[in-house]
Amino acid sequence: MSDVLMERLRAGAGALALGLDDGQILRLMEFLALLQKWNKVYNLTAVRDPQEMLTYHLLDSLAAVAPLRRHVAQAGLAGPVRLLDVGSGGGLPGVVFAICCPQVDVTCVDTVGKKAAFIQQAAVALKLPNLHGVHARVETLTAPFDVVSCRAFASLLDFTAWSRSALAPHGVWLAMKGKHPEEELAALPVDVQVFHVEQLQVPGLDAERCIVWMRR
Image (cartoon, rainbow, N blue to C red; front, side):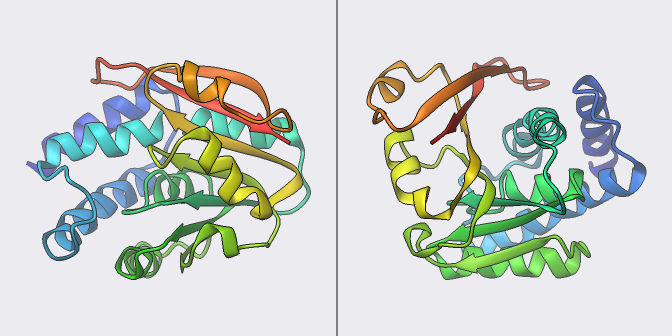
């Protein structure tokens, strides 16, 4: 089964033109195995089937890697880029970002202690010094992050309101969404600027996905 999954992962990463090396593919597979193992005890995700986990979690998160890399390259930030993944749960997309973007320092925050502990465990098991798990409410974080991301976390209004104190003055919000969220976009306050809504194509998934890019 794992060979089949690995080939699907390779094919998906290839379709997304991510240029991942063997070590990164292996780490992604190890992350999937960790997620399955911990999920039996801690209920990190409702998706149980490994094939579905690969499509709905790994490939879905991988679809946002190229846009993130592009933003990092264009922003020309000095030193490691700091990314905060809000409501990260089982580390999606945070752990995937940490594996695929070694130059990005990823902090996954969750209000559930077990989920934050899973991220810490994943950082050790996968040997990812650029991955950190934090058990906290995002509103309490004030360290300046260059990118604040979320995936299926909350409405755009709540996401930007709750994480505002953690966003650096030059920082951007990266919100992964399904269909183009017209109503959520309309509900944003005037001091949040949507500067790009980017359509994503997830390999093997016939569903709409997009990233809403925002800044102050």
